[in-house]
Image: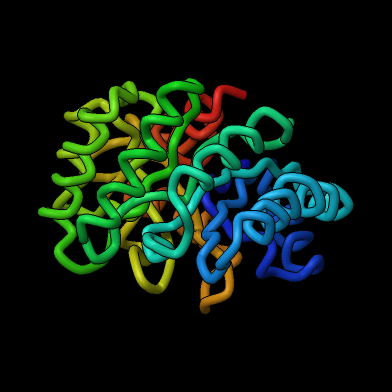
Length: 255
């Protein structure tokens, strides 16, 4: 089995950890920006440049082909001048060949500021025809996911360019019925390997994309292989498992 980890934060992981991911079968990955804590556009631009240039080069030395998603996480709403940020982000996508998606964007506290930040970034993704990785919180997941769906509709971004991440059994079918991709995040804050496997057994692999979200917080480098093992124990069809572990991410990122 091979894996495409659609959502990691490589800049918070060591070279040896990236190499470990490659050794157990991770053939591709996307590192997502968070971008919070920056109080100036130049500082944030330097951070995005690091993600799109230095991290893919470092991962390549570990035999892990890596691309980047660029954007501003919802917890950064209000930290920067929005118009200046969007102008910088548009230029970054024009300049960075490894930047393949917008992300990680989304909602966390579901505030008006977060709505404005998400909608403006989704409109940019629509303009540039970029896939978008969209964060949903662990709290109030169903109503906030419904709000994310509403904002994707308002932005004009086609649903098949939206990966709505951190879904669970309550929201997976909502996301797929909308036509978006459903991100199954195998992480201590989201789904266990057994939990993700159970969702694959129940709903199949259509439009499901697995990821580990490994970053600065405690997480499992073996999240995807463990999920595959649990899925096989539950009798998940090999075609569904292959789609969720690799093929769907390949299609979403258009690689």
